[in-house]
Length: 218
Image (spheres, rainbow, N blue to C red):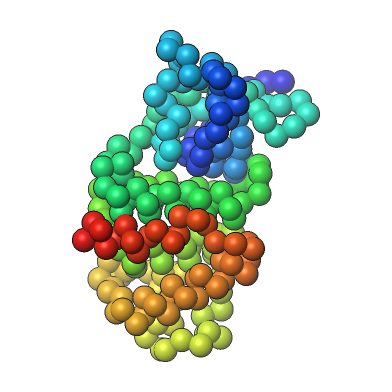
């Protein structure tokens, strides 16, 4: 079969053999995709140093003839987001963003707005501290991109929190000036926790560490 090419973010990796690696990507054109990087652990592998978590890469793969595990043939680093690994809060937030995308998407179903949101969020985490507002924006826009936009007017929230959630879902231009109070953060966090659990059956494991990492960095 002819090779295909796209851009993709490394969501997770796992060993396939002593020398090879399975990489789960979220790609621009194919959605969530699994590839085997044969010989990735060998010293002279062309994949060496290119398949770490969060990396945004240009990839070429050969589609499988009878399954969902494709063969990675070429890989070029577009953006490794190197500073994310220097700060615990950024690393934890990036891990959560990728885990939520992995949990919430089906194999090989492209969601271009979600790919754009993920890559832009990783770029932001590479240069700035994740705030409660940043994380709430990511969660709500990710749900919206996947077709799970909540009807804010029907939620049992105070009026100020509803306005903020509406602004987040609409990605209003004035978001940079918004600040969440502790009470508003608790309300949005409680709602998102419940909503993600209902829609996907469980929460990403890394979500429990978000607030702990923020406190440690602060």
